[in-house]
Length: 445
Image: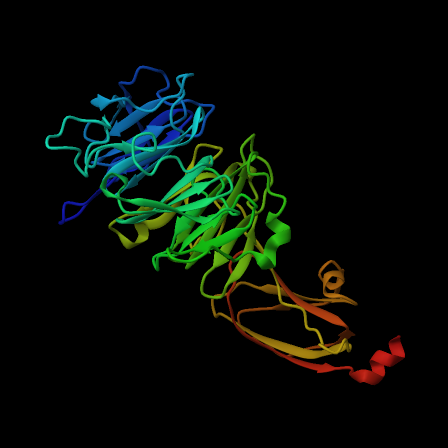
């Protein structure tokens, strides 16, 4: 918790093994919330736990229980409807998804009511009375749901609800995507955006400061989306990395990172800690990066943007299998004590005329505080073969301006590659490249 002159308060709240924990100002450890709920632990251990902040509290769903955390006394309590009823199906199962939008708490994902959505009264997350006695009639602030509002069900299994602005939200479904324009209780309309692209369940989406929504689809592609347009696929260059993702056995979590100006896409197996590959989309260049954590227990199960008052506290937090909350630090020399290994492969040097290419020499300038970098040259008759080939030429570059390194290697596809342990920084790189010519190409046939 951090206090400011404006009265703004920031409190970190998390769940672990069904238990709610929080951090007070200056604390380095988590405090377990006092359990005033009707179960121990208050949240289900075997189901996903999702929460949303509204009216100074955090409201939780897990598919079975409804709970809320009150930071004023550090307690977790039963979420009981003050009017109407919290949504449950005939088997007493509750919502699995929750978001906050335009002063309302929105819940969805009840297994027995897969096409339905439910919104509490504006300003009161406990009021689910859809037919209150409000003379001279219903008020625009009243609770509303797909069962009572004129918009009705979306006709597909709801998997996500994406608040965009105070007047707009996206409804992600199994294989469709809808736009909600305006409040459903005040003549809001739901319109179909696409009937071929859906969203993965949960929070497999995020929003950038420029108003672009990024999401992981039911077809395992990654898309960008803004109101008034169709989803734009941005994962064409990495389709082989995402096309086989099982969205039932993996939890996809996405989070915008303002420091790195891009989108984290964490793909974590949910049956236990196991090796996996995560992705990062760099918005400025459109580049995709692959990430693997050396310790499988570090693979994220959840994430949030911690928007603290101090500049160093405005970071992305991730929660992992080992119950530890970590943050992404651009200045970290290790990955929580483990060496950071990095590999960068340049785009292949090719000729459009299928000629051989010759890399005569190259030179690099590293940052003055950079660690050493090992450079490799990979060769092949195709780019794919080169990427998977053994190293043909290698050397080491150190901090600052390096001497020109003679290479003199020839092949149809040449891939320069960098490898390093720990931190390094590239300022610029130059290479002398020429074609072997048509004569060489004919002679090789």
